[in-house]
Image 1 (tube, rainbow, N blue to C red):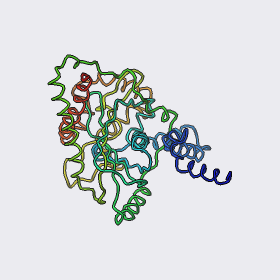
Image 2 (image 1 turned 90 degrees about the vertical axis):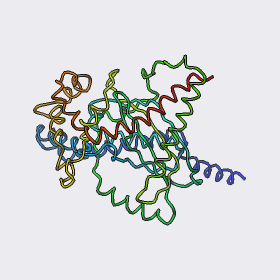
Image 3 (image 1 turned 90 degrees about the horizontal axis):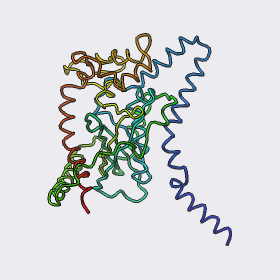
Image 4 (image 1 turned 30 degrees about the horizontal axis):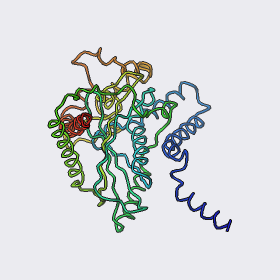
Length: 352
């Protein structure tokens, strides 16, 4: 009898292993631990080199982590999940922060979570694995809006999909760690409460705005569900997340962060070679000059993020040109959808 109880207990423990104490923390911080290991291995390999050479190697490798020349709307972070939607979303968001904003992380900045909204479309079968695909949806002067698509794969396509991503993983570049990575995400967000300006709205106006929000969420989900996935994935859920970038109590505009990380418009001509670390966009040297010796340093970069960018004359603000044109047009179009969702949620505060 005692033996049977022991085996039942072990089975229950195994089934619920992902919900055990600290299991969420381990899954969340696992990418950071990998990065730290790579960082320390690099330092070990160059331990006998002169200090100046070591500093240059570390700086060059750290700068190579940035998504140089990437389109901010086409950089997709993929995370495989088997846990609760929200738990898996936390890990995917942390992974995306490390991949998309490594220079900001090295500067000691943090990312504050404003809110996350889920729209469920199709049920995922019990115990089925799924994939979370995160990408940047839009941004304004303060907030960046992240969209996550939860997808699964038909059985006849699952093996082909795994093979495709295995090959992609081998070619993806490694990230390095710094002491600032573990403190990057803060939640719940502090000092980010939007003043309640809608408390005097009438019930009719509130109901109308809530209806508009519902329509906006459905439109967003419909648009996502109609997107053709090259691997035949099935969409199950759409999640929208609002984040902002902080240095202490100072909010850094996303429009400053993205060009500093290397994000850029595509080349102006279709025949030109795409931007990459070996073919960087024109503004990349200016971004590096802020934080890479001899012209810059990390403290100088931090001061620029905290407000030094305001001192740059209007005609010399290179970060505005980096994301102008088609990127700016898409940002404005996407922002209208996210604004409808945000405004509707704020209107919902007045409902009793």
